[in-house]
Each structure stands twice: as C-alpha cells, then as structure tokens.
Length: 123
Image (cartoon, rainbow, N blue to C red):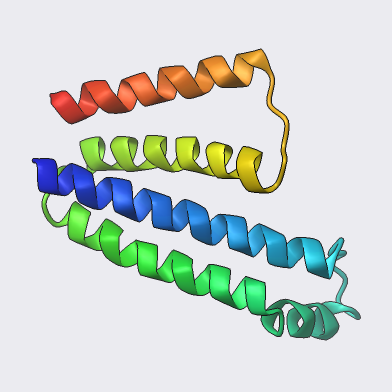
C-alpha cells in the first residue's frame, strides 16, 4: 500500500507543478477572449508559449503516475487520495510561487482535505 500512496503523492505533486507552470505561461499570454475571429491567433499564442507547452508536458507525465496508481487501487479510494493531495499541492505551490493569498476558511478546508487523505490512506 505504501508504494501506491507514494505513486499518488509523486503524481499529484508533478501534476500540481504542471498546473503551476501552465498558469505562469498563461499569465505571460494575458487575458484570453474567445471569439471565432481570434481563435487561430489565440491557439497560436497558447501553443507557442514554452511555459504552456512545458506545463502540458509535465501534466501528461503526471498522468503516467495516475495510470500506475489506478492499476493497483480502487478508483473510489485512489481518486479521492490523489485529488486531495493534488488540491493541497496546487494551493501550496500557488501561495509559494504565485504569491496568491488565502483566507482562514481556505486554510481550514486544506486541513480537512489533508486529514481526509490521511484517513483514506490508512484504511
């Protein structure tokens, strides 16, 4: 079971890192307004940004860990553990690298989520 949890932790961290890098790329691109006339230009801007491409690549790599984990654990447990860890990592990385602010209720929610992950991992 430890190996499965380790796969979920690593995969969730890699996935959260991919999302962080993707967000950095999107901040460079700026606000995206979807319109039919602008669609080719928007697609070009998105897929020529190195951070966006790197973030998508890292997220794909994280999916490999998810596949390995899912082959060894029930979806009902694995999804909750993996998602919970993913949320905690995304929020933590966003605070550290993007300087996002969170309030007390969000901190409380993170703690509850992390506690749920621990309970499920032990069961």
